[in-house]
Structures are given as C-alpha cells and as structure tokens.
Amino acid sequence: MTANDVQLAEAPVLEAVRVNKSYGHHQVLKDVSLEVHPGEVVCLIGPSGAGKSTFLRTLNRLEAPDSGEIWVGGDPIGFRLDNGKLHELPERHLSAQRARTAMVFQHFNLFPHFTALQNVMEGPVRVQKRKAAVVREEAVALLNRVGLGDKVDYYPSQLSGGQRQRVAIARAVAMKPLFLLFDEPTSALDPELVGEVLDVMTALAKDGRTMLVVTHEMGFARRVADRIVFMADGIVVEDGTPGEVLDHPKEARTQQFLRRVLA
Image 1 (cartoon, one colour):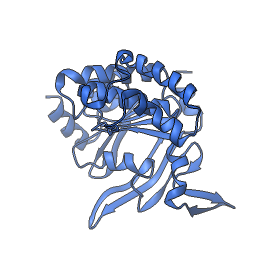
Image 2 (cartoon, helix red, strand yellow; image 1 turned 135 degrees about the vertical axis):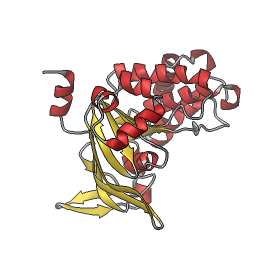
Image 3 (cartoon, rainbow, N blue to C red; image 1 turned 90 degrees about the horizontal axis):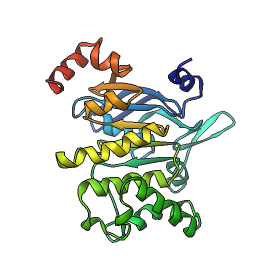
Image 4 (cartoon, rainbow, N blue to C red; image 1 turned 45 degrees about the horizontal axis):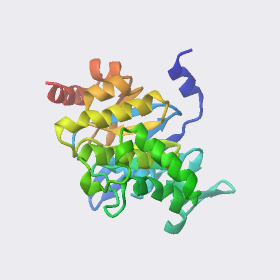
C-alpha cells in the first residue's frame, strides 16, 4: 500500500460538494467538488479567471457560496448540524470554524504596525486565547524554521517581499490548522525571491502538512503535489497525479493551457 493509498483510506479533511458562486450575472464557480485527505498536497492550476482563488476563499467562508456544501474535519462550514439539518451560522460564530484553516495570501496581509513576532503571535493569542508565553516560544521557533530567526523584531516595512511572505506562512502554521490554503503565494514577488518561499512550502509538504495551493509554479506543483487539479471557466476540468495532468493530460482544455505555460 502506497502513502497515497493510506491518505485516501482516511476520511477527507476537506470536502467541497457542488459549490457555486456568482457575482451578478457572472457565474465564477459551477458545481465545483473536491476532496483533500490528511497529509495531501493538492495544487490548483489554471488560467486567470478560472475561479481558483474564489474557490479557495469559499473554503473558509471569506466568500459565501451561493449553493453547495463545504465540510472541514467533518463539520459543515458556515452551518451547524442539528438533527440532520443544516442551520446557517451568523458571522460572529464563524471565527472558530475559520481557525481550523489558515490562508496565506498573495499580498501577505501582515499587520504593518506589528513586528514579525507579533504578527505570528496575534492569531493564537487573540483568537485562540492561548497563553502568550507559550505562543511566543512557538512563534520564535517557527520564525527560525522559515529562516527569519534574526528578524523577529523587524516590521514588515523592513523586510523583503519574500521575507514578509515567510512571516505570513509562519503566522498561518502558528494557528495549528487542519490544513493550509495558499492563494498564489509567489505571484507578488520578484523572481529572485520566489525560490525562498517555495523552499519553505516544500519543507512543510515534507513534514506531512495538508495543503491546498493555487499556483502558477509548474515546477513546484510537479515536485511537491500529490494531486494537481486543473480548473477553467469555473469548473474542475481534470484531477490527477502530476504525471497524469502535466505529462498526459486527457482534456483538450488542459493540453492547451499547458502548451502555453510550459512553452
């Protein structure tokens, strides 16, 4: 039995079922379904406007889907299950559910008036109500892990883009989520800074972190992903191993996209 077989034997940590989302008359997501199992790294690829980032944002209810269900760790996101029926939760009750996931954004979203250490500590202390002394120790260890042990007292304005993104990754991991969401984490970086962020993400994957990554970095997806999901026009077109999707795509839309990006 392979490692992937073991993953698939476990219940999915994330299950999205026929998720739809429209903005006005434009339907961005069309019956998108996806499962992610514990320890899996799944990369979402596809052209701009495919719906990848919107889908990611529905998974922790930063965007409410128009229809469909999203289950994280066996619980419905945005709802409570009572006697077999789903009841929508008010916004103020969603923070505990969102804490089960953690997202790394394109543009870092760090607090500019907080140091690197304070940024990493903020969520566990303020949202999860954990003891500051314990969180501080963990945060310092995480910043060391991402190569920023000497920058704990630096503010975001004193850091490069790659360093800021590494702080954002440490901040996400500090929340001890069930899985990590990455929304094109290298797209806002200068080319020479991309590698340092991908190296940190690769190390997280080797540690067995469950990750769902929207990316245009095909080399990273090939090297790290257990599965690659190709999206276009709001639907999942193809889903398979890196070898299946990148080397032997079945769908014409996937083939067209890969010819363009791998040329």
